[in-house]
Length: 112
Length: 117
Image 1 (tube, each protein chain N blue to C red):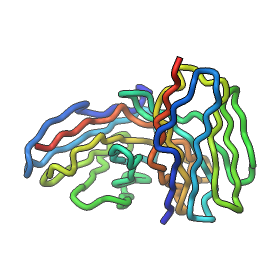
Image 2: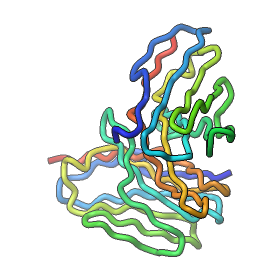
Image 3: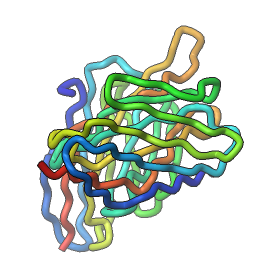
């Protein structure tokens, strides 16, 4: 099956700085890589995703990059704001049904 | 996302008790999932169902069972609860396109916080 590792487990940045979270995956057949944000006490919600035929995708202050050869992908948040504080999960698809394997999560803290 | 609901939201039970967690969705999605969330371990798949007649084990199915009563309902049971099943449980749904291919975005319910004493 798929194995996804996520680093760092915690990340603290100053408001306005950039934050980068990295994930590696094991199954070269994975073709879909979403990122979910989970605010304290809330459910995970999709914030951005990328498919294997694309190397980079941006949506305002967030971007995701994918390196298929190295089997890693990253989430980039620029101009961080306190409301970006949350736990972020990466995931990779596996199997014919495109199930998801999640990374262990990164707790991002943005200090005002 | 109010379209996916879970009951109860919080539950305290004792070792050896049988409990059921319920998930309902009004999104009309065919695919439903149960995950368990533990600190530092992310979300791990317990069971998934692609339609009412299709139930599959996930990564950590031991000690759990499920029932897909209808397209909109997917229940998770702990046959004999044990303390290491204390966790946050999430239900999720996803859709398929007209070709029967999976749309990968998963929509999560609000979660059930379970404590087994």
